[in-house]
Picture 1 (cartoon, rainbow, N blue to C red):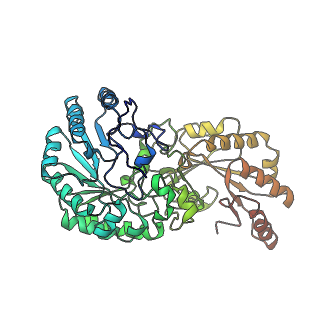
Picture 2 (picture 1 turned 30 degrees about the horizontal axis):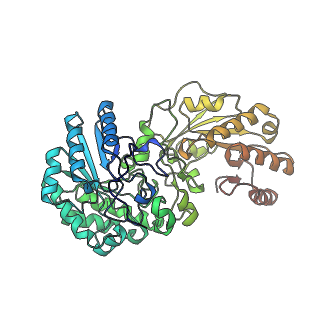
Picture 3 (picture 1 turned 90 degrees about the vertical axis):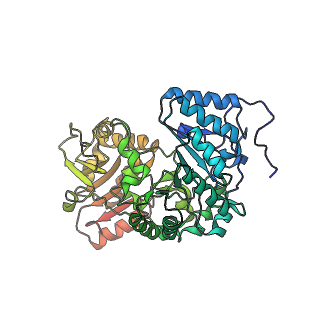
Length: 478
């Protein structure tokens, strides 16, 4: 690839834009330049995807003025590598602080920062730095960063930032090559960088350069044990570990620490009338293990590429979602069951700590899906018979309406529907009716009858006609 100028000779008034950044996730983020002195193997915003590489001063000033006028509390200055443009960086920080922004964070690889530079940044008003320290193993850090010698320069930069009173959070971006070293990374930080008290345990995303090399994705089966051990070591040294948006599903070591997982926090923080969970722009999805998890409303699942490349390895349900017709459902942790003759009229989301909220009904009518969402329900259990399901046109139409609405939502925002059948009809008719319900939106079908050889053969044959993630059971939960 030919080299790209840091500041284009073309007079552009546009901010950098690229495929994959066509949404508002960058709000509050000022990208000073997309040029970078490193070439990280996994970079999800690589310079080659952006034009212009660096926005004009006028464009930067307009973005900064808009941010100041918004009254937001924290401005994040990023890139690329913003420290490449020292004068612009210092001026932007100073202007933000003088404009009343109380917190300015610098996202950096710290390679260019020495004591003088750090002192200038601190004087201008940088309050914190988010540093890409990729591995405590020098060779691995330099390999992932694509820059020989980056490890030593990064350590020097972090030392300078800390010495000048700037709070530092580390960002290791765990890759396949470093997936077994996460706990040791924490121990290294505690010993070598004792002033740093925060680590954001992100992992490689299948975007940008990593889209072309998805084998960089870590194995969640390995990573889960590392994350659990890393949390134990961090607790001993009063280091706070965070699971960022670009981090890991809750079942990869975070199910007991959802209060430090961004997706779970955002799911709780949304306006009470808003859909559940965070917006992940369809980059992630739930697989079968997720569908059986009571925490799924707090978690976006795994990256699409992870299911495709790693086949969902290491993903499991740490807190089981139990359908409401089973006796143990009402006492199961992480869920609430409300049985209703018809759809209830009282909200159930007063206790935000309960991630799965079942409404068990015998039918649905037009608009019930929307009403149940508005009341705070996350899951619907329909307890009926094959004949009732077949003949209830209003129920069938509402299942289709729920399915259409779900299709436009990210997985943790969907209203999940399970079907409990207390009686069946002729087996071919039963199969056709169940297939229709699953096509509409049903993801779990429980045949609540004693298991017989005939029913077992029927279920085995029907499974082959259903989507692979559909749960179809007879005679119980096993």
